[in-house]
Image (tube, rainbow, N blue to C red; front, side, top):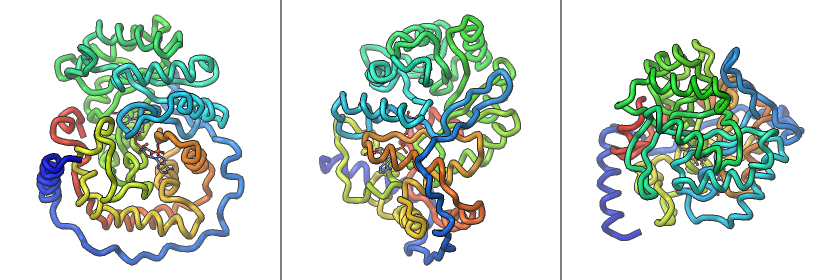
Length: 377
Ligand SMILES: NC(=O)c1ccc[n+]([C@@H]2O[C@H](COP(=O)([O-])OP(=O)(O)OC[C@H]3O[C@@H](n4cnc5c(N)ncnc54)[C@H](OP(=O)(O)O)[C@@H]3O)[C@@H](O)[C@H]2O)c1
């Protein structure tokens, strides 16, 4: 990374950490109860199923999905294409039925890759995708959820994904220029026409969820949620519970940070990794926040788990209608992540972890200012 970029990153880091206030400098001394004897020996045997949404909007999926974005978009060096196809197909073999992508990832190249890998499994698994951006000359130039745009994206995404119906179609970002009732109404029409099966929205407020749900019942809300970002617990999870809407946490391992693989020495691949400009991934923030990773390491160590597994296990234990979608480009990580669907850790143990995590002040905003404006919680 060039020095000028490092300096500007440092400035934005200082700004965001000042806003967040004081934080402890020492790693808290923690002792977790030892429950190694409770470990479930049959962890990877079978991925259980969960249900997102209720009634006519219910959608049965594997308890963990696979986030496909990073296979070729914004998670560092782009891996070998054939290997990513094999990785997605391996996930199918393992029993994963939920695969997440979006038109804007690339744009288009992620859907094309997913279509190539998974099109032939269209009757066995589900691919979820998203509308909501205006794409001009290969670049997103802002939000666009006008009805004609939603219809256009649906048709084009189906072609790229090699499917005849979109199992779950999300609005990617709220569009302030289009009433939410019109967005929900358009998806309702697409459902009636047999082009879409279920409706979802990403990163919207509780108020917007209520308005949209009244027009077309929602199956899932997709928002960032992890031990690093627990904002959805305030309003979003309660409204989902009340209305019977499922919740799909994205970036469930903190975009890689909670796995312990990234630290203040990490060199991001500049051509394809937006994390390099984000406050939480500046070296100072990563150094400060490491006390959270250390907690996950300690908690996992006694139970034979990696920090990534602790992060995913905690999410899965929260509610049975939560289905995280971790992304990975590694076969080993795929197996490691899926193994968390069969953990045997008590609610009390998770609560102990949560109590310790709550003492840590996370440093650095999750998004830079421009992208933060697009999310509503
Ligand atoms: N709706 C939205 O606005 C939105 C926004 C962002 C993402 N998403 C969706 O959510 C999915 C996941 O989000 P994300 O990629 O931002 O975050 P994430 O799943 O929290 O993190 C992915 C990163 O973690 C690493 N990782 C995963 N498992 C690991 C393990 N067991 N050990 C070590 N490293 C591991 C991956 O690296 P390796 O490849 O090396 O494993 C990758 O760089 C995306 O693919 C996308 O479908 C949606």
